[in-house]
Length: 199
Image (cartoon, rainbow, N blue to C red; front, side, top):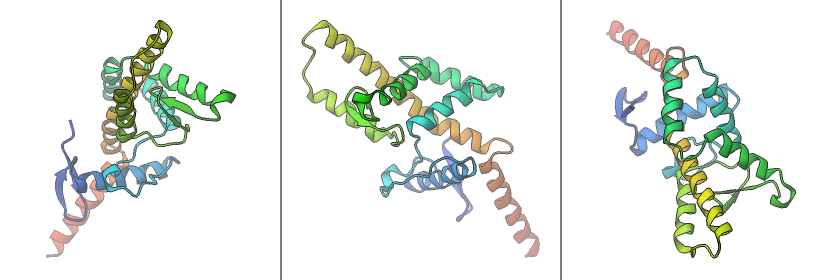
Protein backbone atom coordinates (compact mmCIF):
# COMPACT_ATOMS: atom_id res chain seq x y z
CA UNK A 1 0.00 0.00 0.00
CA UNK A 2 2.75 2.47 0.99
CA UNK A 3 5.98 2.09 -0.98
CA UNK A 4 7.46 5.57 -0.69
CA UNK A 5 7.79 8.23 1.98
CA UNK A 6 8.60 11.91 1.57
CA UNK A 7 12.10 12.98 2.66
CA UNK A 8 11.71 16.55 3.95
CA UNK A 9 15.47 17.21 3.68
CA UNK A 10 15.99 16.17 0.06
CA UNK A 11 12.39 17.01 -0.96
CA UNK A 12 12.19 13.63 -2.71
CA UNK A 13 10.29 10.40 -2.23
CA UNK A 14 12.36 7.47 -0.94
CA UNK A 15 11.61 3.76 -0.59
CA UNK A 16 9.93 3.27 2.77
CA UNK A 17 11.81 -0.02 3.31
CA UNK A 18 15.24 1.53 2.74
CA UNK A 19 17.34 2.56 5.73
CA UNK A 20 16.62 6.23 4.97
CA UNK A 21 12.90 5.53 4.57
CA UNK A 22 12.78 3.68 7.88
CA UNK A 23 14.64 6.54 9.55
CA UNK A 24 12.16 9.13 8.21
CA UNK A 25 9.18 7.00 9.26
CA UNK A 26 10.78 6.48 12.67
CA UNK A 27 11.10 10.25 13.12
CA UNK A 28 7.51 10.90 12.03
CA UNK A 29 6.19 8.18 14.35
CA UNK A 30 8.25 9.41 17.29
CA UNK A 31 6.96 12.92 16.71
CA UNK A 32 3.33 11.77 16.45
CA UNK A 33 3.72 9.53 19.52
CA UNK A 34 5.05 12.49 21.50
CA UNK A 35 2.02 14.53 20.45
CA UNK A 36 -0.39 11.88 21.73
CA UNK A 37 1.66 11.07 24.83
CA UNK A 38 3.11 7.73 23.68
CA UNK A 39 6.61 6.41 24.26
CA UNK A 40 9.60 7.29 22.14
CA UNK A 41 11.80 4.64 20.55
CA UNK A 42 14.86 3.89 22.67
CA UNK A 43 16.87 1.91 20.17
CA UNK A 44 20.44 2.59 19.12
CA UNK A 45 20.22 -0.03 16.38
CA UNK A 46 19.67 1.42 12.88
CA UNK A 47 18.11 -1.83 11.66
CA UNK A 48 15.35 -1.42 14.25
CA UNK A 49 14.73 2.18 13.29
CA UNK A 50 10.93 1.98 13.03
CA UNK A 51 8.90 2.84 16.11
CA UNK A 52 7.27 -0.41 17.19
CA UNK A 53 4.78 -0.60 20.06
CA UNK A 54 4.85 -2.21 23.47
CA UNK A 55 2.01 -4.42 24.71
CA UNK A 56 0.14 -1.56 26.39
CA UNK A 57 0.33 0.58 23.24
CA UNK A 58 -0.93 -2.38 21.21
CA UNK A 59 -3.91 -2.69 23.54
CA UNK A 60 -4.75 1.01 23.04
CA UNK A 61 -4.17 0.65 19.30
CA UNK A 62 -6.59 -2.30 18.98
CA UNK A 63 -9.23 -0.55 21.12
CA UNK A 64 -8.89 2.60 18.99
CA UNK A 65 -9.31 0.59 15.79
CA UNK A 66 -12.34 -1.31 17.11
CA UNK A 67 -14.16 1.94 17.92
CA UNK A 68 -13.24 3.75 14.69
CA UNK A 69 -15.91 5.24 12.48
CA UNK A 70 -13.47 5.85 9.62
CA UNK A 71 -14.36 3.29 6.94
CA UNK A 72 -10.77 2.86 5.73
CA UNK A 73 -9.49 2.15 9.25
CA UNK A 74 -12.37 -0.27 9.83
CA UNK A 75 -11.38 -2.10 6.65
CA UNK A 76 -7.70 -2.11 7.67
CA UNK A 77 -8.66 -3.55 11.08
CA UNK A 78 -10.89 -6.20 9.48
CA UNK A 79 -8.10 -7.16 7.06
CA UNK A 80 -5.60 -7.43 9.91
CA UNK A 81 -8.00 -9.46 12.07
CA UNK A 82 -8.79 -11.86 9.23
CA UNK A 83 -5.07 -12.63 8.88
CA UNK A 84 -4.64 -13.33 12.60
CA UNK A 85 -4.62 -16.90 13.90
CA UNK A 86 -6.41 -15.77 17.08
CA UNK A 87 -8.50 -12.76 18.12
CA UNK A 88 -5.92 -9.94 18.49
CA UNK A 89 -7.63 -8.40 21.51
CA UNK A 90 -7.82 -11.75 23.33
CA UNK A 91 -4.12 -12.46 22.80
CA UNK A 92 -3.09 -9.03 24.08
CA UNK A 93 -5.50 -9.27 27.04
CA UNK A 94 -4.10 -12.73 27.90
CA UNK A 95 -0.51 -11.45 27.83
CA UNK A 96 -1.43 -8.49 30.06
CA UNK A 97 -3.29 -10.81 32.47
CA UNK A 98 -0.27 -13.16 32.55
CA UNK A 99 2.02 -10.27 33.45
CA UNK A 100 -0.19 -9.52 36.48
CA UNK A 101 0.15 -13.03 37.91
CA UNK A 102 2.53 -13.04 40.87
CA UNK A 103 4.59 -15.98 39.60
CA UNK A 104 5.32 -14.17 36.31
CA UNK A 105 6.95 -11.23 38.15
CA UNK A 106 5.33 -8.55 35.97
CA UNK A 107 6.26 -10.25 32.69
CA UNK A 108 4.62 -12.43 30.05
CA UNK A 109 6.03 -15.02 27.66
CA UNK A 110 5.94 -13.88 24.02
CA UNK A 111 5.03 -16.96 22.00
CA UNK A 112 5.61 -19.03 25.14
CA UNK A 113 9.39 -18.53 24.88
CA UNK A 114 10.87 -15.16 25.89
CA UNK A 115 9.88 -13.03 28.85
CA UNK A 116 8.95 -9.42 28.20
CA UNK A 117 7.45 -6.72 30.35
CA UNK A 118 4.28 -5.01 29.05
CA UNK A 119 6.44 -1.90 28.53
CA UNK A 120 9.05 -3.68 26.37
CA UNK A 121 8.92 -2.82 22.67
CA UNK A 122 7.81 -5.75 20.48
CA UNK A 123 9.83 -5.85 17.27
CA UNK A 124 10.02 -8.27 14.34
CA UNK A 125 13.45 -9.22 15.71
CA UNK A 126 11.87 -10.34 19.02
CA UNK A 127 9.31 -12.40 17.12
CA UNK A 128 12.09 -13.96 15.02
CA UNK A 129 14.02 -14.72 18.23
CA UNK A 130 11.00 -16.72 19.46
CA UNK A 131 10.78 -18.57 16.13
CA UNK A 132 14.49 -19.41 16.30
CA UNK A 133 14.10 -20.77 19.85
CA UNK A 134 11.16 -22.91 18.70
CA UNK A 135 13.31 -24.46 15.95
CA UNK A 136 15.94 -25.58 18.47
CA UNK A 137 13.49 -27.05 20.98
CA UNK A 138 12.26 -30.62 20.87
CA UNK A 139 8.67 -31.64 20.29
CA UNK A 140 5.96 -32.15 22.89
CA UNK A 141 6.10 -35.09 25.30
CA UNK A 142 2.36 -35.27 26.02
CA UNK A 143 -0.98 -33.92 24.80
CA UNK A 144 -1.03 -31.04 27.32
CA UNK A 145 2.35 -29.84 26.11
CA UNK A 146 1.22 -30.23 22.50
CA UNK A 147 -1.85 -28.06 23.19
CA UNK A 148 0.27 -25.44 24.97
CA UNK A 149 2.80 -25.30 22.12
CA UNK A 150 0.02 -25.02 19.54
CA UNK A 151 -1.67 -22.18 21.48
CA UNK A 152 1.65 -20.32 21.93
CA UNK A 153 2.43 -20.70 18.22
CA UNK A 154 -0.95 -19.24 17.23
CA UNK A 155 -0.51 -16.36 19.70
CA UNK A 156 2.90 -15.59 18.20
CA UNK A 157 1.48 -15.69 14.66
CA UNK A 158 -1.21 -13.24 15.78
CA UNK A 159 1.33 -10.89 17.35
CA UNK A 160 3.45 -11.01 14.20
CA UNK A 161 0.42 -10.07 12.08
CA UNK A 162 -0.48 -7.20 14.42
CA UNK A 163 3.09 -5.86 14.37
CA UNK A 164 3.24 -6.09 10.56
CA UNK A 165 0.00 -4.13 10.21
CA UNK A 166 0.78 -1.65 13.01
CA UNK A 167 3.27 0.41 10.99
CA UNK A 168 1.04 0.45 7.90
CA UNK A 169 -2.01 1.59 9.88
CA UNK A 170 -0.04 4.18 11.89
CA UNK A 171 1.37 5.54 8.63
CA UNK A 172 -2.15 5.77 7.19
CA UNK A 173 -3.33 7.67 10.27
CA UNK A 174 -0.36 10.04 10.12
CA UNK A 175 -0.87 10.89 6.46
CA UNK A 176 -4.67 11.10 6.55
CA UNK A 177 -6.17 14.60 6.28
CA UNK A 178 -5.42 16.36 9.56
CA UNK A 179 -2.72 13.84 10.51
CA UNK A 180 0.74 14.99 11.56
CA UNK A 181 2.37 13.54 8.45
CA UNK A 182 -0.11 15.37 6.24
CA UNK A 183 0.60 18.62 8.11
CA UNK A 184 4.37 18.17 7.75
CA UNK A 185 4.01 17.43 4.04
CA UNK A 186 1.81 20.51 3.64
CA UNK A 187 4.37 22.68 5.46
CA UNK A 188 7.14 21.35 3.21
CA UNK A 189 4.99 21.93 0.13
CA UNK A 190 4.18 25.51 1.20
CA UNK A 191 7.87 26.11 1.89
CA UNK A 192 8.72 24.97 -1.65
CA UNK A 193 6.03 27.24 -3.11
CA UNK A 194 7.36 30.20 -1.12
CA UNK A 195 10.94 29.51 -2.26
CA UNK A 196 9.73 29.16 -5.86
CA UNK A 197 7.88 32.48 -5.70
CA UNK A 198 10.96 34.25 -4.31
CA UNK A 199 13.17 33.09 -7.22
